[in-house]
Length: 261
Ligand SMILES: Cc1cc2nc3c(=O)[nH]c(=O)nc-3n(C[C@H](O)[C@H](O)[C@H](O)COP(=O)(O)O)c2cc1C
Figure 1 (cartoon, rainbow, N blue to C red):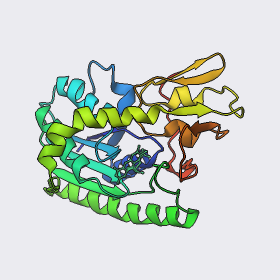
Figure 2: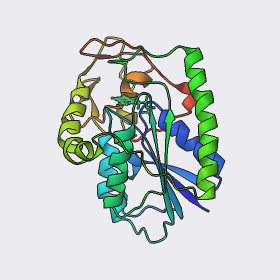
Figure 3: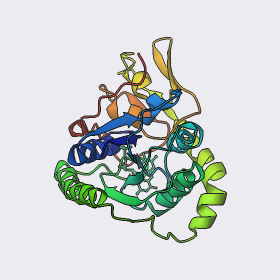
C-alpha cells in the first residue's frame, strides 16, 4: 500500500521518526508540512500518516493549521487509513487528542496512534542529554518504530489515549492559550558570532525569520520549534532569557531540509 507521511519537525527528531517509519513501511514518501502550505493538490497514498512533535503539550501550531486549511481541502476519497505519531519527551496525551480532533474535523478518521520518546529539545526548561543518553533514545525509538510499522501493516486500531481534561484542553485551551504561549518563543537574539549565513532563515518551518542588515530578525509567527537555535552552525543564536540546556544539533537525524532559498 502506498503511504504518504506528512511531517513537521524542528530539530529533526520527528523527521527521523517519519523517515524510519517510511523505510519500515516501504513504498512510502515523507512530505514536509512547511513545504505544503501553499499546495493546491497533494498526492496522497492510500495510507496517510502525520508525524509531529509535542510543543507545550500540543501539536505545533503550523501542523494544526496545515490540517485545518490545506489537508482538509484535499480530495481524501482515496485515503483508506490514517495514522498519527507524536514525538515527545515528557507528556503528549493532549497533543494526540488535539491532533485526533483536528483530523476528525478535517474529515479524516485516525485508525492508529503512536508516540515516540526522544531527546527533549526544550532547552529553556530541560538540559540537553549526554551523547550516551541520546544514543539510548535513538535505540529505543528504533524498536518502537519497528513495532509501530508492524502494527500499521496489520491494520491494528489504536486511538489517542484518554488524557485528563482532554476535552477542556483541546476545545478551550488549544487555540487561544497555546498560540499566545508559543508567541513567547520568539524571544531570540544573535551574538557577534553570527556570520549571516542565512541558514536559520532557510530552515525556519514557519518562515518567521528575515535577514535584514546582515542579521536575522524574528517575527511573531514562531512555531517554537527551536530549529534556528539548535541548528545554527556558529551557535550564535541565544535566548533573551536564561536557559538550562545546551545545543542539540541532532546531526544523526539526517534532517537537512531547507524550506526557502
Ligand atoms: C517549545 C517546545 C516545547 C516542548 N514541549 C513539550 C511537551 O509539552 N511535552 C513533551 O513531552 N515534550 C515537549 N518538548 C520536547 C519535544 O516534543 C521533543 O523533543 C520532540 O521530539 C522534538 O521533535 P522535533 O525535533 O521534531 O521538533 C518540547 C520541545 C520544544 C522545543
